[in-house]
Length: 118
Image (cartoon, rainbow, N blue to C red; front, top):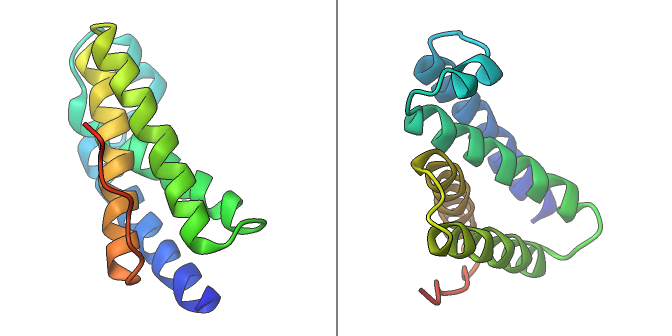
């Protein structure tokens, strides 16, 4: 199963990077963030990339079901905290992209993603 997880994870990361390049139109992410303009689509894919690469690191030392559960719990908790604090849409988009892609990968692998408590 480890090979299947890595293969699917790599393919999904590659796809997210392609989508991020399209959404950013090749601009540097830090320049887009500093522009003061909403960049929800860019932040969405940046969050997906962040969550998936964090998951890859976690999978080196943690069984898959636990790694997915831990990642989703952390990303969901941060999203809930940011929403409660009234954080801008870029952070919401970032965390949402991560959560949705972690969930999508878990489901594709036949792992049960923990339910969203929200």
